[in-house]
Length: 84
Image (cartoon, rainbow, N blue to C red; front, side, top):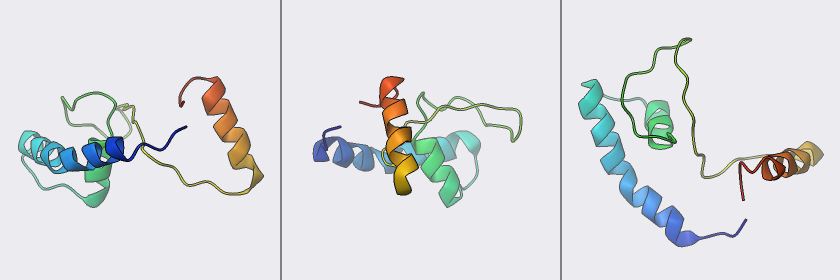
């Protein structure tokens, strides 16, 4: 789990472009939550998602955890090869 500042900088430099792309496809402004979620989609945005009907996979760049259960959760994600 190495910290690579260049990956983070590249992602956030591309974020405005991703948000504008989604806004153009949806033809409406986005909420802050939508901007965060659409920019972290694991695949390219292709359709509008419907609440309760659509599924999406995300690639979060960071998570916040606390107490002893966080360590166990991280170990399970590593063993499932969801994070490196």
